[in-house]
Image (tube, rainbow, N blue to C red):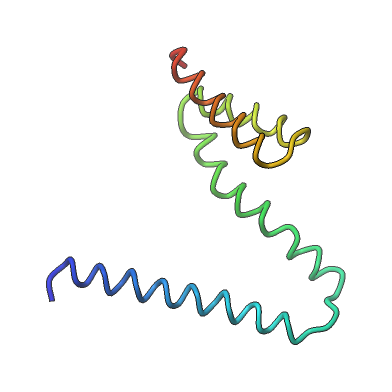
Amino acid sequence: MNADTMNMVLIVLLGVVTYGLRVSGYLVLARISRLNLRVEAALDAVPVAVITALVAPVALVTGAAESIAAMVTVVAAFKLPILPTLVVAAVAVTVLRAVGL
């Protein structure tokens, strides 16, 4: 097998494993009628934690434009729904990069 074939096999295999993990999580939670309040609170915090883990390195390690845009986005997130917040983020980083920051 050449490298391209190995890469495709790896991508498909990882996709199948990811899908299996998602389905198994759903099936486990579907069997439980009522979750503990602590478990429910922890599961509610997962999306915020994932987004923070993805965005924080970019906001802290890259240039000033990205850091300022991240701060603007946080402020917008408290006041706007998700779609307008994403638009504010994209516009902020685009304008700040165009300005030269």
